[in-house]
Length: 412
Image (cartoon, rainbow, N blue to C red; front, side):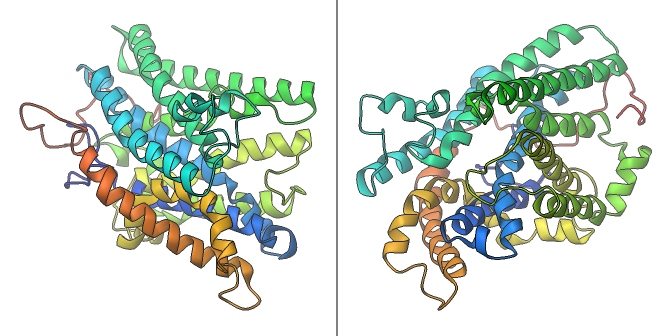
């Protein structure tokens, strides 16, 4: 964690520590989605041996959900375990609205007016501007197609403070050890409910259904990040007391090696479809749903624990170029897919003879990154300066105070 000044887009709420390596993790998530979309449209997924791996990079969505679960829930947890008031709902809501709405509305409007997006300039316009395209199967891939996952994120933003208030009420007056157990039990319960609901829906329909694109059908993916946030709060200042955390801190490569193994397993051993969207049978569908957030969780472990300067994974995540890509990655996510046909029509898939995948990846990546940077510096950054508007300067971010009742490291 870090107390250094951060760009407004990624600055934590006042008084909370910053985890700068999550910027690089966000870049990996956005890059994974860009690569898998390009690999799908150029048939790289189906025709190249490496396509078995690029076809599975739709796991980037799960990475985003793990990141959001960690970064957004942690301030609520830190306040609760320190016995102080949590983030005010109006402050939390202002931060979330300013972070996602202006850039999204800009991209949605400009893209609909230029390249054309189905549904946006119709009587259903409010569905897309209101982050509701995931509520109907018929609208899921209209508007900005990739934004179906952003709609789930928006649902999580609304649900999170309600969840935090509920947990605060249930835990009121209880010792920290009991609070930890309640948090773990609640996260396990909502995860099992989510997995069970999806499984039943798949069995009934014989294929993916609307459940898969709703918040409750993906709650377990957010729960991974929320559980990681709980661990960092409980062990704040006492990380070396936990044997597991010591291993992660001293051997950052280990969780990444496990993540690579799971990627290999999913890509090569389970007979997964290489189409996008994938075609699953029931066992494949469940396996991938369980594997994706676990990979994201493993990638996030070195970013949450340990010295940011130690270990190759942390040096990768802390690379300035990767961190900058993470800073502007929201724009890349929003703009790249609708621009793909235009870039192809302009010859963007033929700049490297015989390699349409690399050609389109470079050309579309460059175009998307340029537009994303312009969106960030001209629209997002000026607006995000109002994210934490206060009459008095906010306190400098510090390490979290210890919970009012000590929690054994073994519990964390």
